[in-house]
Length: 477
Image (cartoon, rainbow, N blue to C red; front, top):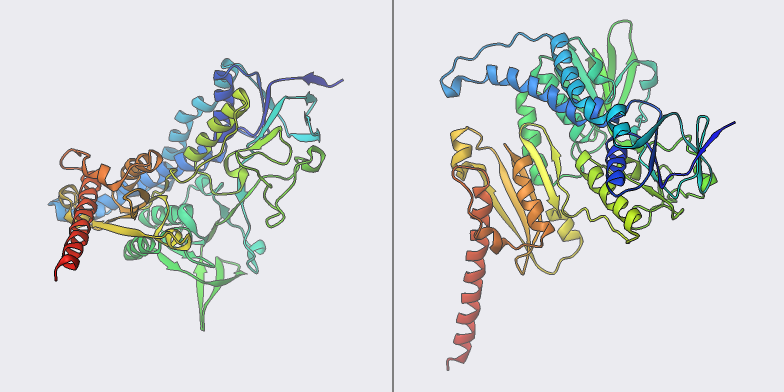
């Protein structure tokens, strides 16, 4: 006979979003059952942010050895063992794992059920021999890589974003099918670790990034030797040795020889097997692979919320955590919530880093803002950047006519840290004039924010003087 439990909350999925939601719910005094079919931590731990950063850190050491001459240190070719690089990545993951372990969550009072989960009615989930009749449910099942419609791909072996970190061998020529941050981060890391790398994208390589910033970043990656081909039509041919690819761009057709393929493009929510129809949870009419969601990440079943990448849009770990806390507070206190993404930064840990928050220039234009201006500052004018020979960078601000900061984009060293300042400014509805009064320590990249604030303040004063002068001239005979 099945066991029946009646917790305040049942969470389906034990990745970053699900675990944060469980911990937040316990802090709010809710009883929690969490169902996870695989390892706790999900891709965010085992093959996502932590693993990618560890791989990139190893690659950065090799790159620094080859490029030390400008600092008066002789260049040296790095001796790379991919087995040891793999072990380094796994050791980082292993040291983080206890923070997301069954033992820790159990100690917090969360009941963990290792099983598949499926709804049997709008208020009930079945997980193995357990029947869970919870007051509220959260779906945090994450996402998986969408297989692109590439002729011949199914006939050859390939890595995915989940399996590439299991590799222990040097890859002579890695061809990456995909676009976006993860594809380019892995591409640069493998190039620095001694592989030839080609990125093939059916559209733009950075489709959601400000084009000015994207162009700067892609130029640097190409200068390092990463081949990036955009707007490509691709087919794959299986061979007795290696893999062949045919790449068409416009009227041009090229043939590539690859040793390995990595599929790292669009991700789709994990919805299969949940029996959503039994819970009266509707899918989006325009995107059937995603949920139909109301404000606050609530599904058509008012007792069920969705967080993290299961909600459909790209959801880095920090956004998933934010969503988890917002939804838990809504459940615990009965207050309506809405998830505002305008102050949530997005970061690509390429070199140079790319970071954005709020509106891009194109988005501001599309929204037909009555008046906005663009402020730019080059890293070449920053003393810290000059000292570290990191002068190839740009900060770009989108500012409303009244001075309110609408968006910020950065490409350059430390972009991931500097963007936090602009994210805070946007969340607190601060203006560019407020940045002008910010005292940044010297020498730091944060000084760029102060400089841009002063530039806006100077322009505003100049405009006010021009208006006064024009008004005075109209009074003259």
